Image (cartoon, helix red, strand yellow):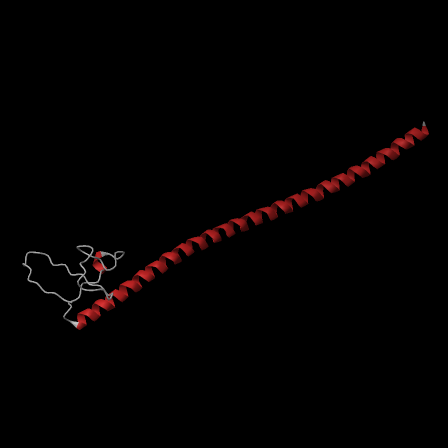
Length: 142
């Protein structure tokens, strides 16, 4: 039901409209209802002129666009969060790659040191054996 009343020109007029099939006799819950409270004021659908089917259609289209806008904003927020997660994973992978390269260098250095120590050990064993032989020769000759 649409009611009409004369309002003085100096008083603001507020019109509430719902896309639901609710009764027109129910008063609005808020004195200035926002159809989409998460939208900025300038993006809110303007109340339609109830006598104009074209105005009603434009209002419904605006509401659909506002819903789509809200969904896109949610999707963007989710994608930005996913982007942060992927960047963190990439940073971790790069850090692990650097760590692996450092470990590989350290491994190579330790392997070289091990080879050098084994060579030194074998030389010491040879030298010890020569000294034993010399010592035994001296013991046998005296």
